[in-house]
Image (tube, rainbow, N blue to C red; front, side):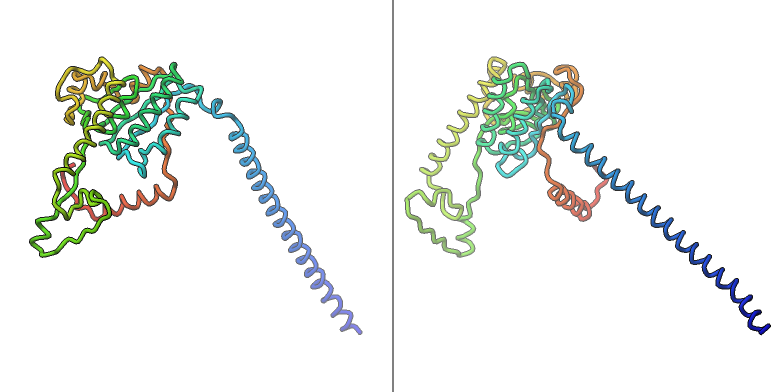
Length: 315
């Protein structure tokens, strides 16, 4: 009996200790759950607040988001249908630049060797139309490195053209180039078999001799396109063009000589034009930007080219 009572007295404290540990564990678990719940609550509140900010920002009209500014549209690279400097790409940008009620003027930053006369004519006509629709908004073309051929076609639609003394400007002409392989075919011993329906369907076939009538037809077509080009430049530049026989010969000049010929009005950078001529320091770029995957592929291509390009001490 005495031993049983002693065992009960010894066992009781152990039971009480086990209960206390269980209560502590439950309390700590509840506290952890409470903290975790509080953290998730804060996260979702911040997420909702960020969503609300974005919605409110998008609801604000663009005219309120941007102050008085100079609108910028880049004409960069080859002017062609599938390129960045295509009419489909740049016409909406030009319209947005002119239509924004807080844009004070438009800069066309030109850096292109030329391209399609069709795409250039689309852009030229759209600039002329926008100039007439928004007479209070000047549009200036600013040449950086090069503005030749179809690029100058586009630039001549601007109110004024600015360049750097070292810029390359001009090349007002039209060309067609190709290759002829008739001699090579004879040397290799390959016979060309060209069958057409229509006597001129095989015109300019590189594996057949060039016919004189084909040459005359092509030259006449190029002359007509050249006349259109010359007339567009004359309409845009007017009396500023010098009386010089080489002006429309396809030659190109540096900016200093181009200014003497009336192809360029003065020397200035895009920043100078925005600040001192348009009078709006803030510049907003309206040029359409490539999507993420296109930028990624281009940057990957550049990186690969740098890896395999031999290094050179001269830059």
